[in-house]
Length: 162
Image 1 (cartoon, rainbow, N blue to C red):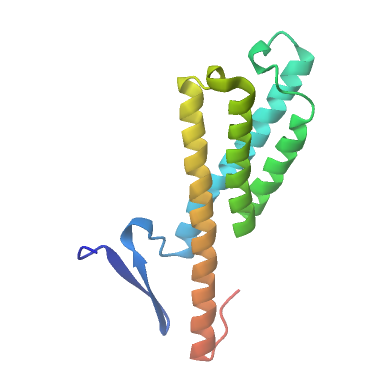
Image 2: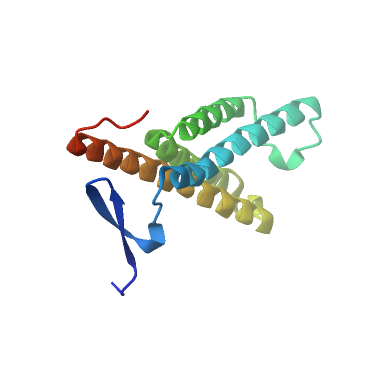
């Protein structure tokens, strides 16, 4: 690797080498990064709920979304729970959120074909994927930094502050 592409992170007596392009060196930075995944999940839950409510309140308003039905509220609930999980720094929630979003996108592509993916929809899909990937990166970095802090505290003979 080119010089300067790796950074040494020190926490007490423990150290780790991190590639610069994926560096999240503090727990606060990991939390800020992971929040993007929770924002995407909360937004997904909100927009799905609104689309279902509008469809049943005004059936002609969302003619293009004829594939949405009441079962989509289950998806909204799942995304809400995933958002809460990511907010609490759960790696599992972040990965499940990314996978579920990919599955939802594939299902929509199968149901609607290319007509459901105009330029705006493609941009939103890319934005949401980036947010979920940031959620995965942030939660994994947070847990790694937490483990590094715990190891450092146990080696130093003191306990990590809570």
